[in-house]
Length: 195
Image 1: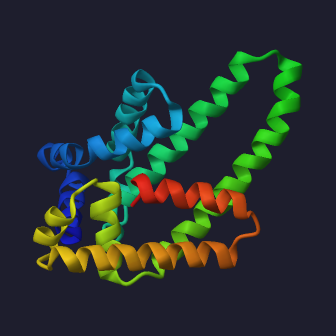
Image 2: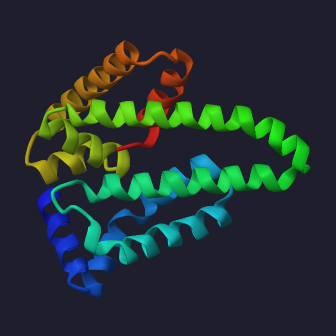
C-alpha cells in the first residue's frame, strides 16, 4: 500500500493528473471526515478539503515519497482546519474581546501542537506493520477485513496490531506529556479517526 502511494506521489511529481486523481479518490473521504470533526461545518469542510488537494498539487515536488502521503494530507487538513477555526473565532467577536481571548486560545493551540508533535513521534516509533494498520484502519477508515486483505495477514492479526499500537501510543503520550487532559482528547481523536 505504502509502495503504491509512493508510486502515485512520484506520478504526481511528474505532473500526472491521473495519479493525482487516484490519490484524491483514495483519501478524500477520510480527510473530509477528519476536517468535519474539527470545523463542525460540512460546507466549510468541503472548501478545506479542496484546499488540501490544491496544496498537494502545488507542493507535489517537495513531498517526500518515503513518507506517508496519508499522514501528509492529515497534517495539511489539520493545519487548515485550525487556521479556519482561529480566523472564525476572531471574526465573531469585537477586537478587544478577540485580543483577550486569543491569548488563551493561542496558548491552548500551541499546547495542542506540542501534543500533536508528541503523537507523531509516538507513531514514528511503531513497527512498520503497526504504522500500516493504523493508517489503513484509522485514516482510511478501512475495516479489519479490508486491511487484512491489503496487508495479506489475518483479520485477527490486524486487530492485534491495532490494539497493540493504540496501547503503545497511549502509553507514550501519558509518559511524555505534561498535559494529561489534552492527552485524553488527542488519544480519543486518534481512536476515532486518525492515522
